[in-house]
Image (cartoon, rainbow, N blue to C red; front, side):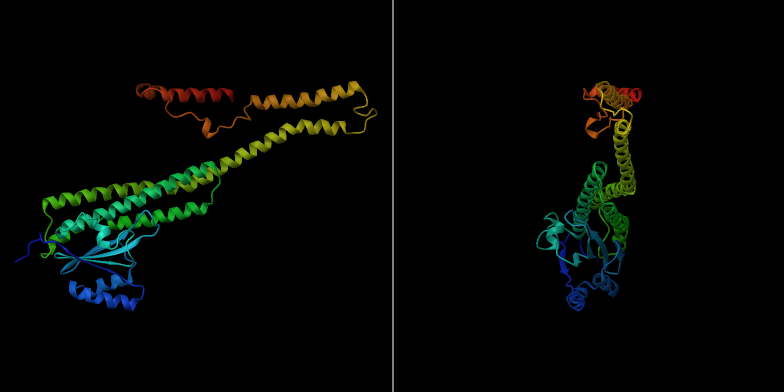
Length: 340
């Protein structure tokens, strides 16, 4: 006869030491207590596992990658889920709190049955991953703004792209865990199937995980175009610099021409006569002002800066903004086109 599933779950945890022999010696007593398979013991000791959920005779073995906002690299956690027993095996201490139980439950799953405790733990793990993703998204947005404002090292883009790739791979491998958890729990009599209320709680966590995966896909696409934005902004910045250099060279061209012409040896020295000096100054400054006026007319000195750009929607009322903002923007563009 199966035991009732409403008993509070017993949680044991172990932080493995760095020494492999000491880690095995500390894990062996718990492995005997939870009747762990040798493959599970090897996975816990060796680490470097993908997110997965495996079923054994007396327990479920869950591997999860914990991502937290204060750290770039993930922590690998191993959960052995048996009847009213839960074993947590980690390679290091939790980011907050004195124990992994305190960090994962946050007093939300105290004195709860096994499946409620597992749901609370998964909720905390997904919530931590959402916080990590928010930090990466803010970093990507800030990096995109910096690319448009100044030159940055492309290694920063490549490094952030690598973080997103690792995070995306971990979360994609963790996606099937929720459906497998419901399926496997019904196959093991000692654990029992989820009740309708427990399914609703698990569905809520699954919904958060789905939104997390969608946001990860969008961020992955953004990181794919971030390098293109970098090279495009660099090319635009180079074009503006070449335009400035061309403008300076064009302005100084008539000055250099007349100064070279008047510096030649004539029968009459250039500034010996007053009328020759006056004609020279008129030709010199007249040509320079003519070139300056022509370049100004052609818009060579008009550089569109971010601070001068108009907003997409004009600052009007909520009703006027929908039909007037884009029209104001299009009029400004037409004015600029007529000027050029």
